[in-house]
Length: 319
Image (cartoon, rainbow, N blue to C red; front, side, top):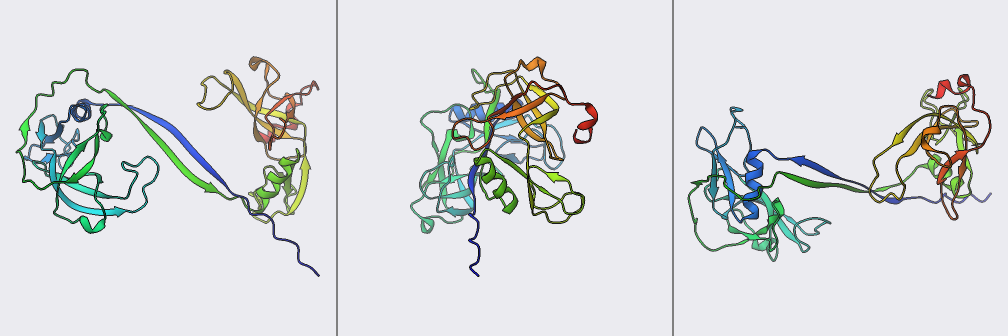
């Protein structure tokens, strides 16, 4: 008997990305504004230690810190690690060292990139200096990187009056996660069916519930599921929300409705956008059917069927 061919292993690159916006207190504002002006600031604790980067509270006593001092743009490498393959968004496009640098006048080290021709050119204790970015805007990237430096310490910490024109008061930090997703057997079957404009779930052999999307196992009974069941195409809106904030890179006008939809024959509601009806007329119990675009691998949205609304008792267990 010829064995069945192994199913195709599906995988896809996925990205989760959003901008994180935060305001700055007086210490962080002064530090980032100083970088814009090619000045490195630290903060002095009651015990006399100078912390760079500065913090707003003493890590030992939790006392509030406001005594800003200027330190030198030169320093000493305290430890390092070589980065042979820089990733997207890192300081340098060519291999470099991540280094902890204790700037002259500081008692703590600052983490940043060190530009060097290779790992043999880097050592603990080597002298380095800041290489400033040509265009500076008030962020840690105003330090383009560190570079080797032959000179001695250039200055002791000196008081700073924190007087800058147009201080930086907030920053936007992009958060991004790149990863590759590989679905298992159950979801691979589900995706293959969607490509044919069908929706399939899997039935639990014990409780007989049909789960869509299938998970490969029943979340209630804990047993494997293998029996495929086609559901829908029609379904019922069980609950919904009105979206009023437009997402970046999503070409949908707001407001719009995103809903939980219980497809006919399924015992688990899935997510879908509701279209073809004013957003303020969407309601629980609304009967809907999927709308596919040409070449689409999943429904673009769901629209009303024109049927009478479903009775609450028919979907209350799926809320």
